[in-house]
Image 1: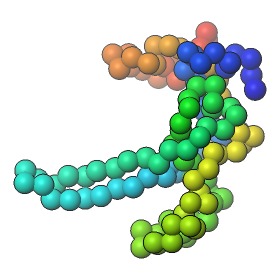
Image 2: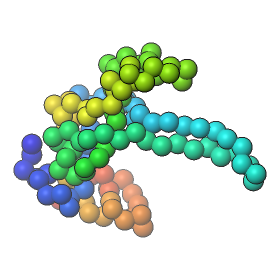
Image 3: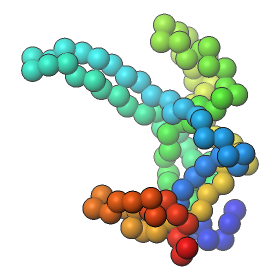
Length: 120
């Protein structure tokens, strides 16, 4: 684990080692009619962090990788046992991270520079 990520107070950008940008986050969604219109509701499913992410978070979204058996993600699948196999930390050896500026923690800050490594 990089020494520069050992402080919990430092925000970090996590990404796949191989540069693969495509992945999914496990969650649920629902569409329902409310008296004042249609409501789109969604929630993420969280799990424990892997060794790399635990320096920043104590719960993280479940990451679904392209190599996971996505056939089981059919909305008609009611086999919770087969779905629970996916609720686990993403392998730390398939990820890397770098520290980011603390400016990313404020909604008043905007711009591409917010995702640059801290100190660059």
